Image (cartoon, rainbow, N blue to C red):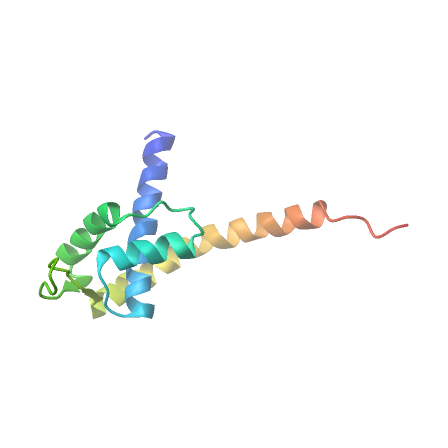
Length: 121
């Protein structure tokens, strides 16, 4: 597997975790609203658009992790909500990512410690 494929797989899982997390914490919403939250909360690090969030929503729906409501409004807006299974999936995904995040935080703490300005006059 190439580095690009690994990064892509990581991003896919991250998007799915973002989608589930925002549905859990913010309540039911559309793919467009989720994309806006991902962009906002990641400070643009994830270039989320409705076009790349909806495929994740469809996969999560097929897996039983989210439920889609009936289309509403003039533009046929579909609102999604997390299911109990989705909550379990989110928890498992968070547990899977935890060692990676902890390792990254350890590295960042080490960098900060090693590059801190000396306090000696």
